[in-house]
Length: 135
Image (tube, rainbow, N blue to C red; front, side, top):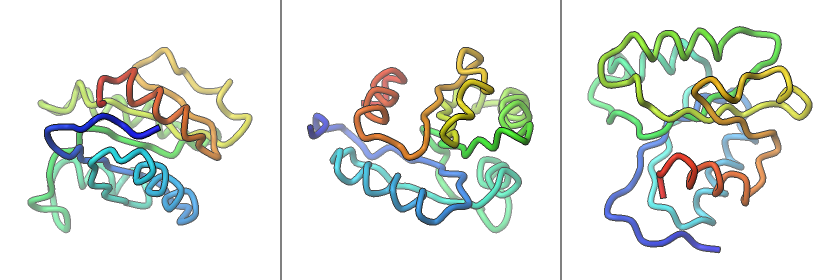
């Protein structure tokens, strides 16, 4: 099912180490026909530099969506949300956590972000985008 036409492309910051998962996200977005530009970084420190627009990410657009790999053994999601809330203009940035299968129960999907299990399913990604009013 293709998405309805949109006035402009959405900018997506994908924080994902796994090249296969990153490729899957890009393929799903292409299949959806949602006009989007995906910027990928490998970890949260790079993601934060991207969001702040500091070198080497000077001049990059502010994303409309953050897709963040959720490692259940790390506190990256709580740290990321706390840091996002501290920057003007980023407090309302929609976040979707990408969780390894089985780690979803350990996440807090009711605390300001959505959770999608890996491997990401097309219909769940579309539902998450709709729930965040991005389509």
